[in-house]
Length: 136
Image (cartoon, one colour):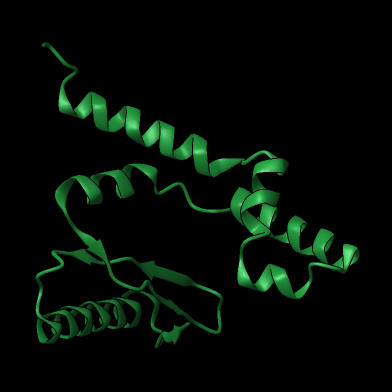
């Protein structure tokens, strides 16, 4: 059976991922959110629930489009680490998301993250003349 080239399948998967995560219909969002532990805390408060729903929708609408990256990671069998974000008093922000094989040893993972942190800090200092602050 002839199929699409893998690159075309990845583009299609990224488009589907983007579609499914970009603007969920309110009824689908409500159904999902009603099962979230934090949502149960405000289940009986209509105003808080409406405000929280609006904020969640705002966060989804403003989320970075990482669909192709996410599909590529999954296809390659890579697992993302937590994201790393830096900023300065001048408001220059920078974020890095690192992904690697789930078989990467914890010591190697720490060393990789340390190397990325050093590279970002050196770049900030060299090009911006500022020392960045790690941000949560």
